[in-house]
Image (tube, rainbow, N blue to C red; front, side, top):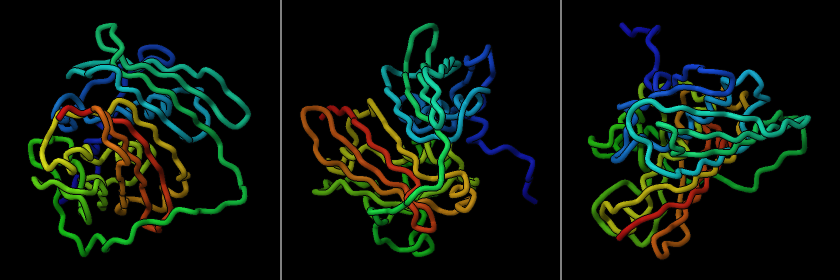
Length: 269
């Protein structure tokens, strides 16, 4: 029999204790560890959750930029949040994650209220098989955070062969299944392994330096999505002198664009 009262591991990992107004204490979560340090998507989601916890926050996320200034080590950390300006329909935030008084990660965010306007979508989702037609599988077992997701790759599955193309597409949802919210959508925007792995067909030292997420989904969109699969699609444009870019799209089960993300990654090869 399923224990419906049990908290999801993702929510446990996002747990924050309020130390003072705008200052929170968190702890890294072993189930969401990466090869080095915590999974960047979880760090991004924790920033978002810190704003959501703030009593003065306005509306829902519109954009979030995270700059990974240094390593986050296992253990406790503090997140400070500050609303630098609140306008009639949007609100601008600055955040810092620090350990032992040293800043490891910074972030800026825009939250806002959405209103009825003229709408259109020029982008369209990639044509891929349905999740039921794709075998589940993903990352090696030693990458802890990946065990928290059910992944079904339609292109770009991790292997040991060089590729002339960096495109990756996969269906993904939390495991165990969990209704999508802004925090989990944020985390999924960093679901892709470094594109350099795919191009070179091997692991090389690599890590995200800066990640920006733009949100198009509303709370109503996420409620309709519930725990259905999200289609995640990404590619790079250039690998050059130790840095490469990555652009990504996350699509809902109804083929609506939920979010886009853009990041710059360093690598050594």
